Length: 108
Image (cartoon, rainbow, N blue to C red; front, top):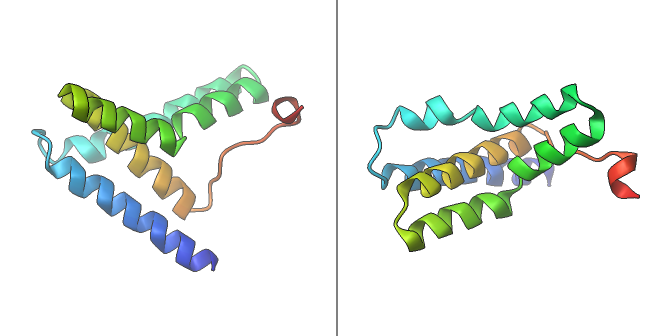
């Protein structure tokens, strides 16, 4: 089952790139921006709780979908781009086995 879920996540990465190609950006913007969401891990320099909150916020697929849809409805390609990059990045992270972060402080 884990293999099937990982394949599904990889399909989501491909879907995000496919939808990106419909935007009016050069193809190389997608790989250039693809790892920008990992900047959120800088929160771990403060402490584990801040790092987990920042990481989870930026890697949450629902936020990515909301940004993409908001950009679609408002005709703001930058929001669509941000949503697709975040969605593709989060999907690749999950395909590689990286999940949203948990800490004792957050779960209390």
